[in-house]
Image (cartoon, rainbow, N blue to C red; front, top):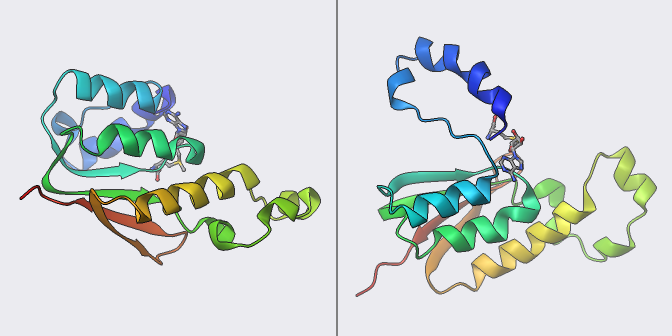
Length: 145
Ligand SMILES: C[S@@+](CC[C@H](N)C(=O)[O-])C[C@H]1O[C@@H](n2cnc3c(N)ncnc32)[C@H](O)[C@@H]1O
């Protein structure tokens, strides 16, 4: 995450009584995730992805099958309905002026469409998009038999 969030978040973690238990890491998310995998860190019961939408595919591919998600753990991915864009036909023909006025990032829409398709056909996981606000995908890894 961004460096300034570390300072910003500390008083809130303290008020919640979890300051000693929260480990804030600064840096590019993909580097951080790869570092955790490389260092064989303890698996997480819950991982939440909510950064740059164009990076989701790489975050997902680095996490799934790496051992970073605990057995029975859940991977949540935010914004997977992204204002409806991943499911909007002819997205590439939309007027840039209109998209700008609606504060819609077309690149994110395209990336999320590909990401959703990728997850839907991935036999390693079971996944559902929950239609909560901007869409949250709930992903669990299938256990090897
Ligand atoms: C939509 S905000 C969500 C933050 C948090 N989940 C929340 O709800 O408050 C996305 C955050 O991801 C950070 N971010 C975007 N791309 C990133 C990257 N490649 N590496 C690390 N952080 C990134 C942004 O700086 C921003 O703080």
